Length: 466
Image 1 (tube, rainbow, N blue to C red):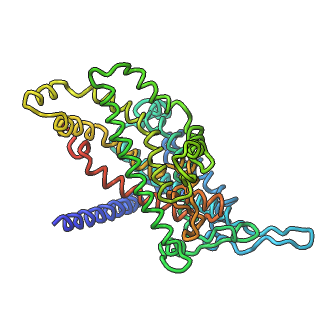
Image 2 (image 1 turned 30 degrees about the horizontal axis):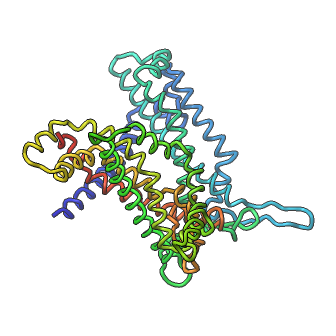
Image 3 (image 1 turned 180 degrees about the horizontal axis):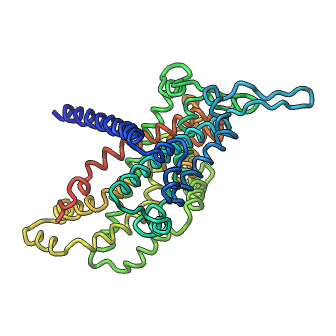
């Protein structure tokens, strides 16, 4: 029944998308047929209709976008877009002492992608220009006056101020976040690695070959390594999230308990862990647990062990050590959050529970824990997804080691997907596989986030906890 409803929703979504696209094309055609000559010329010369109707501010803005688009396409875009399908065919070669430069696959991919985005942006502006012309024409036909240039300018700081305010942040997000993601996705479909470094060695499109390699379990494929690292990444995120969550909550409850003295002192001691930069503390702890570190030296001196404990060279022990050290790092954060929340739980609930004969565990499981999970559900999800990409703890403690000949791509037994991606990029310059892993990290994180978010009590029933 549920699967049938899900299928109907998907079909409904697809139909809605097709309907919206159809309505847009229909509206473009209707405006072209019924519009006056000013509107029709605006299909070719952006802003022409606005300028002819006296709206110079908007008209010049639209015209400037078209002029910039034409100049860019003539001088830069067209040349790179023409080679985008092959990513270049002419290599750079040396003829004696002279270097004859050819194509550069990296620049072709970058500027080709930028050109495609610019074309999409121009189409959007072109559509906005047509809508604005149709709107102005309808206003004039109704016998009303169009807003003056001054009114249009003032609107940017009045009822359109939200668009003005968001313009720069949206542009920044697009340039520094969206474009790099799109570039990474494109790299995943190429053979860009240490053997294909432009401009001397061009790289090209290889389709889904890299994805097949990542999921291939036999031969020299990355499949065995990928699933091994993925499993450890999920196990790590689960333990790292819930150990710090419940132990942090327990510490907060213990400190807040009546009769505990020097509460501020205990909180201060725990908060000092946060005050020290992770970069310093984690590197220091890593050295403490090394084979020749202070921990092993003391245990050997006291005669408690006969040989050094392989904290970082034994795979299982290394993983356990990382989880335990992460508890030390994560408890203070959760303790601070839990302290504030515990103080907000109505004391009447506990008093009523005591009168009804409830013991400490019953009060915790029926009052404290449901309240904490309800309020901190989104935080818990954020922590889990953050731990999936927790580069600092893994890389600074173990460097992803110990290394194993059984794993491909220079991966170690404690590597997460994110640290393995880093090694492939920096150490092996295997950009194509790193890009594929980056996409897989996004897919895994997105699926888990969406599924868990939709089952959180605070999302499903915002008024549920009273």
